[in-house]
Image 1 (tube, rainbow, N blue to C red):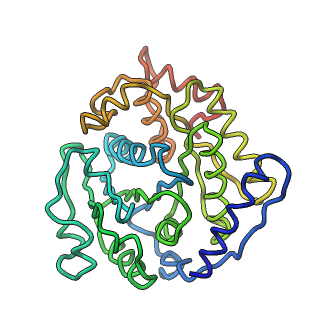
Image 2 (cartoon, rainbow, N blue to C red):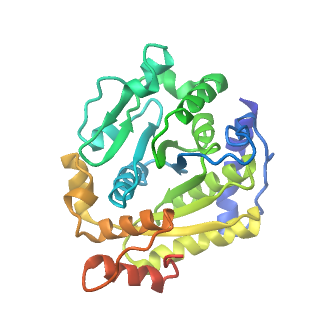
Length: 315
């Protein structure tokens, strides 16, 4: 589609901007998907807060972050629905060791309603599974996508709905990002991941300038490295896109995370005392504007101090 072709073309300039040799070009601000949120009656507050977790490229741990973030929010007392929006390449149910009986493909075909396919889990969250390998879902029309998103709004009773989008700036990814209340962009310290994260931020701003964008740096060796990556992305986004990106936090690289993936159990549950789990808890708390109990000894209190030292303390 023409408007998304503009978004794809914009990515060619990203490397130049990161290298400091070229300015960013801001694309058109509006799209037909700009808005389910704007269609709500004036003064009406959404019952469910929608958070889209996305990334500029695959392989940065976006789905792992989505799953563990959802569980961390549930541990903080929220009722959470996690939707696998990586259409056609679904992985949330795999990470949770769940074989879904129904999925969103049946909803698209009119065989089921969204309420029919919600799956309760043993981790305190409900999920809507995607449809792994069904290519039709990766090429939805605007009407199909908007109809589906409208259906999501009808699901009441949840404090938070987290949408794990696909990677990149394709139409289905942008379509799931735009209606969200908050967008969390996940990246890693790898140069290609940083470049593509900036490309995603640029695409979001191009479609809707006022969108709230937050950043999580995953798989970091040190807090200092996490701050370096975040500061770089925040700086160039401010300079070239005239937009503010919030440094939400970081997740330490640990072999325990890979072990949890292989065992198909979330690492915040399997290894609650791990450094990566403590980091995830603080990211969840910051999204919910909550402060974790830091009294006494313990890994959570220790890493809270690290977050504060690098300028990511609780607001």
